[in-house]
Amino acid sequence: MRSAHIVLDGHIVAEDLCIDFPAGLTTCLLGRSGVGKTSLLRYLAGLLPGTEATGPVAYMAQRDLLLPWLSALDNVLLGYRLRGDDAARRLAEPSARALLAEVGLGDRLNDLPATLSGGMRQRAALARTLCEDRQIVLMDEPFGHLDAVTRFDLQDLAAHLLRGRTVVMVTHDPLEALRMGHAIHVLSGTPFAVGPAIVPAGDVPRDPTDPGLLTLQGRLIGQLRAGS
Amino acid sequence: MRPLLTALGLVAAWEALVWLTGVPPYILPPPSRVAVVLVGRFDLLIEQAAWTATEMILGLALGLALGAALAIIFAASAGWRRWALPLVIVSQAIPVIAVAPLLVLWLGYGMASKVAMAALVIFFPVVSSLYDGLRRTDPGWIELAQTMNASPRAVLLQIRLPAALPAFASGARIAAAVAPIGAVIGEWVGASAGLGFLMTQSLARGQTPLAFAALVILCLLGLALYTATDRLARRLVPWQSFQGD
Image (cartoon, rainbow over all chains, first blue to last red; front, side, top):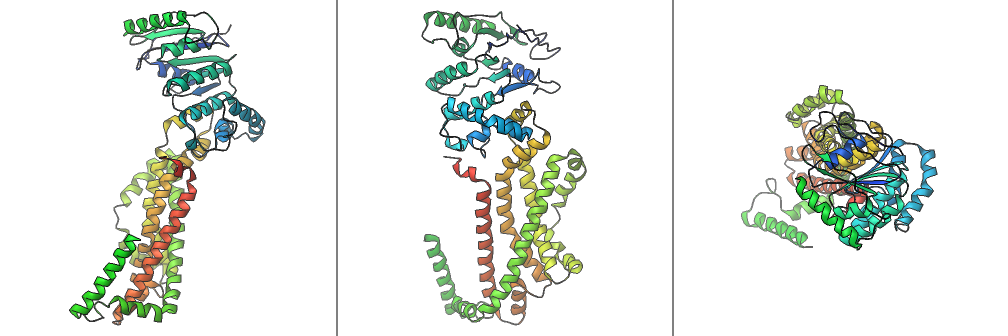
C-alpha cells in the first residue's frame, strides 16, 4: 500500500496535514463550501503558487472545461495534443474512441461540445481525464452541477471506469461521498482538520437506497453541521 | 426589406427637397442627377474604385497582420509587455489622421502612403482586441493544460490563441469599418488616383454630382469590405455559431 503525506506548513487553509490515500482506491474528502477542499486538491495537482504536482496526475474540475473549438474526440486527446507528441497521440486514439464509446458518446466523436448536453459534456470530460492514463486522478466536485438522475448515472459510470486507480475526490454531497468513496474523510474548521477515515461496507458504487448508507449519510450531515 | 424602403423614402425626400428649394446642383445635386452621372461616368468610377479598393484591402491585411503579431508578442513575452506595452497604449492618444500628410511626404503620392494610413488607423483596435482576448483566457483551461504538462508555448498556441479568436474577429470587424477612412483620408491629403482623389478633384471643379457618385461607390465599397470581413471572421470561429443556443 502506497500513501501520500501532505504537509502544508504555515498555510492558511490547512496546517500540518496528513492524509493517507490508499493506492488503487477512491478517497472522498467531504466538506462544506469554502472549507478549502478545492485548495487541497489544487495543492495536490501542483496548481497553487509554489507547489509542484505530487507526480503525474489527471485533474477533473467541476466545470467540464471542454475546448469549444475541438471535437469531442480531440478534446479527449487534449493532453497528447498539448504535449505535441504525435506518435503517442496516434497510439492513444483507439483508447480515446473506446473511452468515448464507454461513456455513451461513441456516435458523437466529431461533434463540438456546444452541441452536447451538460451530462454528455461531463461524460466527455471524464473520458478526457481517463485518457490521460494516470495512476492518480484528482476530481473536484465533478458532478456537482448536474441534475440528480444524471449525477447518479455518472457516479455509476465513473466508479466503474476509475476502478484500480488512486482517486481523490472532493465533494460537498454526503451521498456522493458514500456512493463513490472506499474511504471518506470529513474536513471541517478553519484552518480545516481532517476527520478519521470512514469506511462504509460494500464495494463502490454503493446502492443509494441501502438503509445502512442512509443512516451513515445522516451521521455525516451531523458531523458537517457540528464542524462549522 | 423595411430598411430598404426607409432608404428609398430618404432618397425621395432628398429629391423633393432639391426641387422645392431650388438649390443649385453644384451645392446639392438631386439623386436623379447623381444617378445619371453614375451611369454616364461608370468606367471612370470603377477604375478609381479598383484603386481605392486595393488600398483598403492591402491596408486591412497589413494592419491585421502587424496588429496580430504585436498582440501575440505581448501575450508571450513579459519583457515586451514591460518595455513596449505602455508606449502602445499611450500612442493611441495620437490622432492618427494628423499623420497623413507626413506619410504622403515620406511614402509619396502613390499607393504606399494610403496603405500605410489604412494599416495605421486599424492597428490599435486590432492589437487591443486580440491582446485582451489573449489575456482573458478562462483560467480553468490554462490550469487543465498545466496538469497535462503543457509547455507555455503549447498553451499560447493551442489554447489562448484559439480562445482569443472571437475577440480578434470583433477587432477585424471594427478594422474593416475603419480601413476605408484611412485610405480616403490618405487620398484627400495627396494622391494621383482613387475615389477620394476623384472627390476632391471634382469638387474643386464644381462637378458636385460626380463627387456624390464617387461617395456612393465608396459607401458600397465599405459595405462590401465589411460584409466580406464579417463572413471570414465567422468562418474563423465556427464554434461560436453554436453558442447561445
